Amino acid sequence: MEGFVIGVHGRVARIAGFYRPGALLESESGARMLVVGRRKALHPHFMEALRLARDGEPVPAEHEVVSVSRALIVSEQVPEPGERVREVEWRAERPGVYGPEGEVNLLKHEGIPHVTIIASTGMGKTTLVKMLLRQAASAGFRHIIVLDMHDEYGDVVRELGGEAAPPVLPLCDLTDHELLAATGLLRVATSPIRMMRYLRYFVRAFCRLAEKTEIENLRAALERAGDAMLLLDVISPDAKALDERETLTREFIRALRDELGPTAFNALREVVRKDEERMAATMMYLMWAVEHAPRVELHWELPDIVAIQLLEFRSIFAMSDIALAVMSYIFRRLMELKEPALVVIEEAPRLLQDETARRNLELFLSQARKFGVTAVLVSQTPHDLVQNTRLVLGRVQNVAWARKLAELAPQMPGELARLLPQLGRGEFAHLDGQRVVPLRVIV
Image (cartoon, rainbow, N blue to C red; front, side):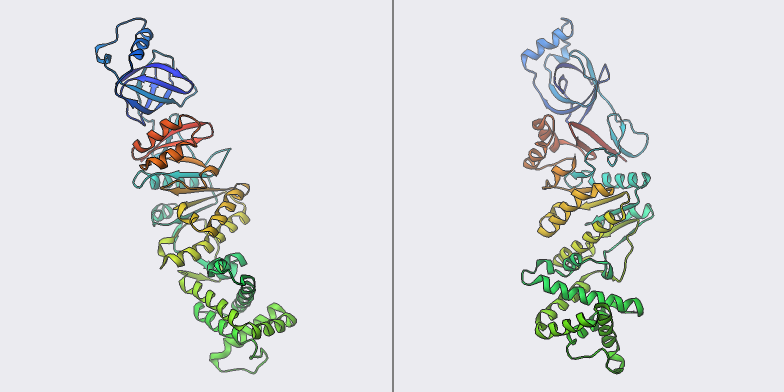
């Protein structure tokens, strides 16, 4: 179907012709336009403008009652009134992400590195993210980490030579902050500093002992060490050999003394005598974290490519704390490594409901660019971090959400708000600085 350009105002063109929203048009001069809205009836004064554009020729019969489409000009070339336009197919030589001028790499950008992808269920978010994972692997990203809420990316991660596995809690590699997150002590309002000190002593001593001793059952060993921590004030590390059941208790206390030194160790024993209840609570929190973590290791080297399957957790509460600790560990390690990395975070709004997770994620996004890390946030709804990222918007069926997102568009926010609920599967609009760039995912 051919139409005619009947007017151009800034980056907006009005076209005589009934085109669906989301269609890509090309004029005779090669200008590209994205249809963002349409009306069935043409206002009478546009009919006169159309006659003038055709040098006074009669309007063809099929255009006597004509529709008007509004389109955003997405090319440097701007069409002139009177030019014929036609809908064009997307040029795609292979599966990938395409814009009007050809294949697009959303991960290669000189401005804001991070990307937020928002679209309703079934509109192609997962397919788009899989394309980005392949692009990252081809571009030589050193690490590709997916925080996978729905176990959707294991296939492509394995295809790229990585692994899909539940999260690992690397006990001896965690910072104080990460230990507090894993145990839930970040949420404890009463005396968390003292509990953090007990937790640090316990883990440091246990890891020192584990470096010298082969431990087959990590959970059982931690439980025995916890018992020993509570007995610091009554058991001497210099006691004669106890029965086999008590060997780990004695060895743990010796490792703790070696780690702290005699003076600090004796001071800690005195503290334990006066604060046994808080000490016991600290041990309880740690054992709870170890029990609920899918995997607990002494050390864990961050894989090059991995999908962390958060769906494996046993309860929402456990997922909140363990996931926060694992995410904090991953974020810190990536920034320490200072190597090109991609982190995909599914269900970003769900994380932002947690105040501690929100602070961690905001800090990570603000610092990640300095260390070569790009984040992709995937969501079905708007969230507070969208203004710190580039937006890739698919079909958003909720009209209020569509309006909220369209307000961030540099051009035609009203028409873009009407467009978003009408996009098809695999159709997206990329809000890139001062431009709105249409994208298609070709499979």
